[in-house]
Image 1 (spheres, one colour):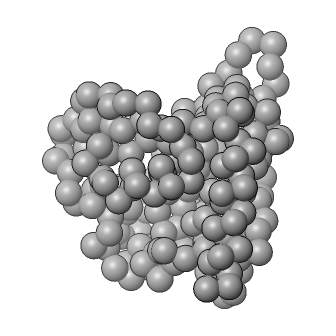
Image 2 (cartoon, helix red, strand yellow; image 1 turned 90 degrees about the vertical axis):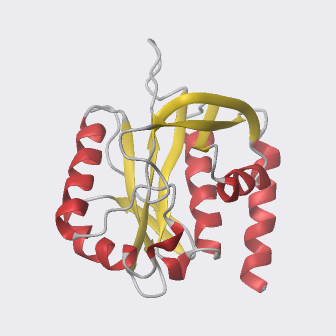
Length: 208
């Protein structure tokens, strides 16, 4: 394993290495209100959550992903997951040149709060300033307009639609079918502007 587990610490959220010990708390978080998981894979019971975590830990062991549990500082509650995924490697580099941020979900009570903004800032800062990546990808179901709008608001650039790209997931998806994916990216050249946008948004949310 080239990437050892690590923690990213903000003022309202902490991104900790995902572990099986988080499974029960994550089921509770996922059960608050499942109506917003139309295009997101969010396990709804303990067995499914344990299998979900096992799969992510297997990807981590192969340096394909870095999965996190999102922990709210105010009550130390695990309230969702996120990860670096589709980690790429180039010969001669000890850190990834490109990663994707995805697999993100939050409990209903944590949605539309500063938690998601700060988590994205933590992840992007690590990718661009620690790993020195050239590009961070963000991808969502092409039918998920809410997610597409949120990605564009932080300054990511729309790159196009990949047709029948990934498995259709969430309760709005069709099991066994393929979805179209809307692809976005932030490059190292974009990062200073995106960082400022996120910092301003976070400051506004803290004082709202």
